[in-house]
Length: 279
Image (cartoon, rainbow, N blue to C red; front, side, top):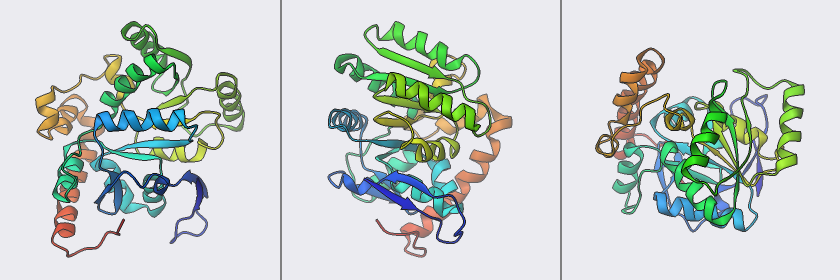
């Protein structure tokens, strides 16, 4: 279930071992600027993860929106990380609208802050264990408290707050040993894009876990550090504006530069004026 990925234009780029999404051909995919976003709903995503864990499959899940798709245009290696993961979910309505325009009528929004509690609810019933990696100091531990109050049967076997840099050899050995000791079914990663996706692609074969899921700022949402948007804002595709209002200094470039780029590029794709790759 693994392939070696190498940047076609940069032969010296790091080699990553990642699962093939093509191992799961039963799920159709939308082509969003060459990124293969699975045409999936929240209910189907949870079912898929349940089945993957029960079958003993190993891989990582990318929750991908406009930001991730635009990052993939700049870096073929990162695009490969997204395209060869276990599951690439549509994070935000733009992904859903593109998918529906391509004929995937039942495609729905599957974003990190919503996927996390949905999977935890399922895990409470199935007995799957969780590990939380990421966030600022104390955030993962607070998330553990929040989720165990909400889901009393949920089994959380560990947390880890990484530094804001790549792990040192000693830190990596510590993490590998910790995860090998507790063997979580699900390893949640709360970093930013593309950092969390690269981390999962690099560590999926090193860590003794079944599934890694990158959920971005979901840790901060569920611990109250970021206010979540009402459903009507999410369904209107305006969640980015709500986030920008809360964190303008950090997020202005992501949204005010990436969003226009996405609109321009997806228009070229739909008009058939630019080929970003086929599925």
